[in-house]
Picture (cartoon, rainbow, N blue to C red):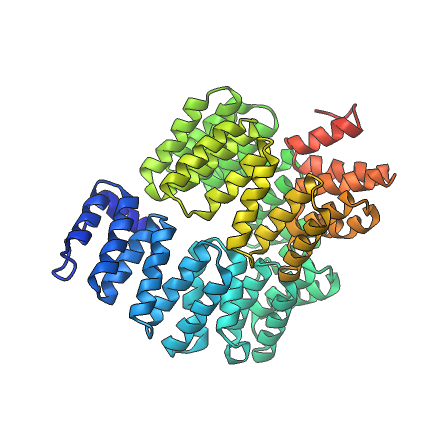
Length: 547
């Protein structure tokens, strides 16, 4: 797999010496651009050199490596297309074309390329699947990866581990029917496969089959007591049987081999369920004992924020940053600094991450814009996004965030047009279908089309809680409150997302079921007491509610 971090380290360290074959003006220009840290110019220079020179396959691979590492997806797409034209029998060219397609959300193109990659590799399908899955893991396109890999192999040709790998991808893409079928096929292939039983337990729990899920979890634990020690606890948690999960974890505390991990899971369970006092005690203990102190310090920072002690939280996050923590700790620290009207300080903290890790430049821009949107500074967020787009013109994440920022700025027509433009480029992307449909529904525009888009997205990924939420919301907007409840309830059971709880409670309230709405909101507030959307909803319906 081509690693962006390695590429950009090379970018900082200076260029390697070009071989005699590569010693053309174009490649020299590209390497000089890398030396001075100008990734975009390097990617474009490599693309031009590759197109002009009749480069060998290795040189095309280098050009594509730089373009992907620099997140210059326009250049990457041109190089990938050229490589496939010049080396139509190359499995590597097909594989890399598929990865580029996944990066930009062209799922059908990725599927076609991966089919060719498996055919041309001529190796065991399970081995080919594993290699492609690893290579595609950087694409941040779970559904596209699953669809592409599923089309590239025949399940009948796969052994149990490969079937479980594909089933895990289906489960992560919210296609539970496929995940269940793949789990059952793996069990039929190997009745002693504990991972297959665990996959089945996950699917059945998410589908609401408690008895079947617990039976599968117990089977997984029986087949591999060490690796699947937490199978039952995880399954009970998925079933929302919190107290039973807690009891099981308390039992596992007594096992010296898994006790520390059981303690961690108990701490996370307490945090998730809003029992912040227990969570603080358990994470403090983990900090004292040195069991993953970075994670413990991060959660103690979150807990300090929940108790209104932002200065203590900031100090914890800054300790993590000094210890080399990634963007997540910097974002929490920056969030607090923004609340203190210290935008320059917050952004300096984020910019330091981009200087230390050049591959994080886009993520830093996205983080800055998100923080600005949280503060209602949509115009400033748009400036950051548009400047980033000038440097990374084909980056799908920037284009998507810009559409959200336009909506936040009240430029609804432009936001819809931006989502429409993205959807035209990626008509088989359920996430974009949902985003466009939800935006139309939320602003009461073209509700029939919004409903068709969302139903179409659900046909592709039928168990996705975000899309189920959209289906419920568009039904509510169309005056179909009773029909809205089922998808909203299921969406919340799957994800416990606060915004979904807001929508579910809103529909219940509109139907006169105010007590049920209060219950939904109360549980969501316990889990996420800082949610602005939830607090705003409560203030409208229950003026005496805590703010």
